[in-house]
Amino acid sequence: MLSRILDFGSPHANRRQPLPIHKKLRWRGRRWYDPNWLKMLWSTVCLAAVGFAIRLVIFGLGASYSQEMQAASPPSQGLAGSPHDLSRLGPNHVTNSRDACVFCHAPHGAPSGAQQQLIPVWNHATTQTVFVLYTSASLNGAMDAQPTGSSLACLSCHDGTVAMGTLNEPPPEGGEADYSNALGGIDRSSGKMVGRNVLGNNLSGVHPISISYRDDLVKTLRPASELVGVKLYPSNKRGAKVQCGSCHDPHNYGSEGTTAPFLRVSKAGSELCFACHKI
Image 1 (cartoon, rainbow, N blue to C red):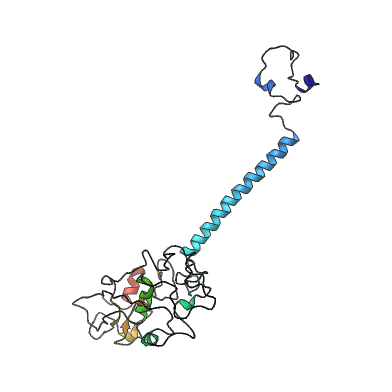
Image 2: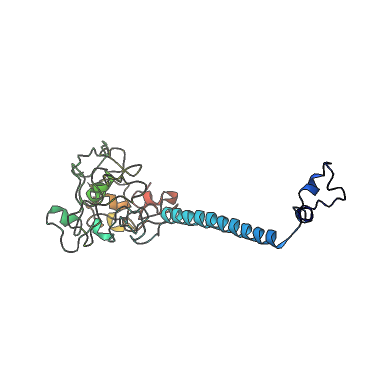
């Protein structure tokens, strides 16, 4: 029986003579590379496993890439899905709140005060930072000693001193102060903004803000009543204030290469500058 099983295919199998390797590897008369149903089944299983692993890698990377693209390319219109959406549904998952508007506005519980006259139902804690503003001998127009109005609202996050979820009226479901899932640009322990979007307290190198628009004193400025796209506060009229929101629309991210990030007018060809300035 043993001699039949270990059949090396040679009439001299019982002699102690070395056999070629391809004959030594025979089993029941088959060579190792001969096809049989067990080998075919095993090959099929292996191919299926490898294919499944490849699909996991491809689709996993694809999903990750899709998420990155979604975060990098927010919708051009509306707050939801933009970097200013600080809810857990936003691209940076800043907080665990499901409400996006509450981080600036409160429909019922906003405290009274001067800031409410400048920003409707303002709900976020206001920064107490003392800022260094732009100065120039050629400036014509009254500038506030410190940022006011919508500029102060912007700086209440962008100066890096106030946590995103420091609110006067929290959302009903809570979660505004949980930053454990926050992505880039937010410190997970403090909830404060970090990185390139932090302006700090030195604003001497940025466009003047909280300054009155005086087209009667600066002849290179377009008449306030003729401004298109950009916005003065409270309205486009002579003497109104230039604020951060004059150039930036906090509710609309805009399109890459033109109105992003959050610009009211396209920056292509200096169109944004020419909205107010004429040369």
